[in-house]
Image (cartoon, rainbow, N blue to C red; front, side):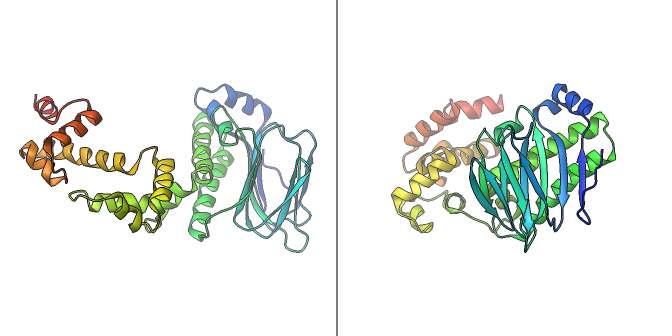
Length: 292
């Protein structure tokens, strides 16, 4: 059902209860599905109060103007390029600003996997990275969901909208990864380090050099790197070398000691230990296996 409000240019779809029930039991849609979706431009006097909360999680994405959200007796201001997640069954109130009313995209959603994006906690209004490109890309994804549901409630459209919803939620939860893909020039310290490691893969480099390249102390760099990759920088560098070694073993006839030297290992026996720890086979066994 497409429903109208009082905001010029607004769009809104509220799915019927029988469709929502079907989505919650569908083998694909049960993991992630939309129940309500809307766009309110310059939404003067927009106000909602839900003393018992909503039956679904809520995403509010402000792209212009200001507003506020009150959860658990705390009130938070919301401005351009901020978003928040409100978990299901969480009492809340929100409203548009009076002098500069907000423009928002919003979705009510549920599902076995989609619920994990909220994890039962209110996520405070969070500023997004300062890039209009990211905003435009999210709006395109939002429109893809909206137009799928606006078209009809066929099985394919409903399932597709739920899958695209996961993509949209991921752009908020994994913002840095989203930024890297959309903007190859964007680099955080971990990305800078990995790029540097790949460039220096054939040379012996010290941890201090990698940290210095990123403009960080060794201790701070190691902490950030492990948080983002679950590996130490040395472990990651060795895995990059093993990956490259597999390619050389696959595609060339170079001897093991030659490959070891090309990849910056001064000791071929150490190279063999590192390779076997990662792959489960020695380089010789690996080459025999792929040629067999």
